[in-house]
Amino acid sequence: MKMNTIFAAALFAAAAFGLVSCCDTDAQYTIPDVEAPALVKTTPEAGASKVRRGDITIQVEYDKNVFFATEDLDKISFTGGRLLSADVLGSSKVLTLTVNVPEREAACTLTIPAGVVTGPNRVPAPEVSFSFQTVSLEKAPVVAKATPAVKLFDYLLENYERKSLSGMMANVAWNTDMSERVYQWTGKYPAINTFDYGHLAWSVAGADWIDYGNIAPVKEWADRNGIVSCMWHWNVPKVAPADEESTPDLQNGYAFYKADTQFDASNALIEGTWENRFFMQDLASVAGYLKLLKEAGIPVLWRPLHEAAGGWFWWGKDAASFKAIWIKMFDFFKAEGLDNLIWVWTTETGDDDWYPGDQYVDIIGRDIYTKDAADCAEQYADISATYGNKMVVLSECGSVGLMSEQWPAGGKWGWFMPWYDGENEDGTPIVHADEAWWKDAMTQPFVISREDVPAMK
Image 1: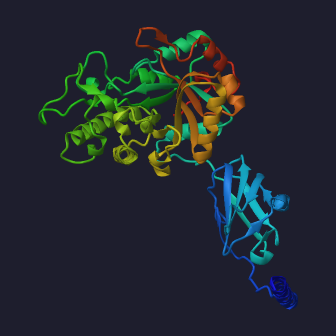
Image 2: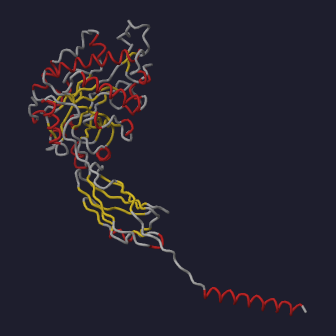
Image 3: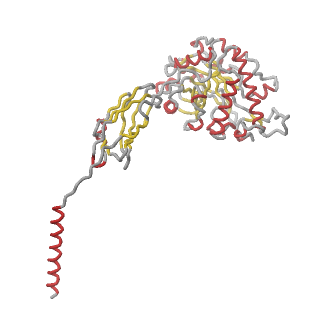
């Protein structure tokens, strides 16, 4: 009885399976019609003319999910540079491509033939082709209108990435002592000497050892066709003054490091604050001193508020206050008629949100210490790709690779400028660029010395 029951059940199951199998065999399946993927947009847009050079990410977006076989990479055409990769990342409507375009002002065209990209049900997408151009160097300064300043800008532009101007920092503030030493070592003067308004409070107060109103050191340098660069280690009061009439003690009442002062950068532009009072007074004082250089026909490479994103100076509190301060200075000096200034902003790299904007900056600087030639060249490549429409310079340096090594590695700085000698906390000397470094630099055919610089007047 038990065996008969099991056998009957097995026959029933087999019959049922056969019925299902028969029905499956006879079933009819239809694939629904799907329209081909349509182009939505490209990044960069067709016709874009300010695309950064170097490695560029291109995105081609469709109106539905798409598919791409990596083995079809060679079917995609790219002119103006080199196609590196193409991929659809996961389930996506976007084909992402990477190309490398090393040159500025390069005309580039990307063409994806019909069928290379497909949509749902492998429906081929139509051809996509569009063009763009990498960024070009800006050909005019943002505010400089005085003839010598325009000539200087044109001279920098003419030599950019063809030659590099040598430069040297003044010893502390207002002299050419270190440039004289370079001459003693090499028989050539640096093309640029940088002066510093860091002792503004002392000069305004009439200290007997510093007077920025005496432009003789600067004029003598410029009269010999030397290029003048100026910066400002902006000393502010360490603490709020007791009242509106008092000023800090010159001996120990000022500082520029953020850790040494209560000066709040976010208050600098708020009327009624003690920070704003000193901020505006100092702007007026420096503007007055810079006017003396303009009246003498001297163009100035002006590099204020340097290394902001590093956070060690008071003006490096945050990106918002820094940009507001930079723009206020720019507008104030412009209103004062200082059209002899070429504006240099110093990047710390990776600090795009600190950038004041193209309309407020002529040149991008970078300060580098204790890095070899390869590191310096790599930083140059990164910065010049990020700010491809601006000239890029080594605005400060110390203990860096030889210029004979940096240049062939790709570190084609518009100029370079070692810092003056200093001391460690234990009193041992710091020599940022020794005799051997300078002899190497001044024997390179791409390095410009003061003897090579034409008159700017």
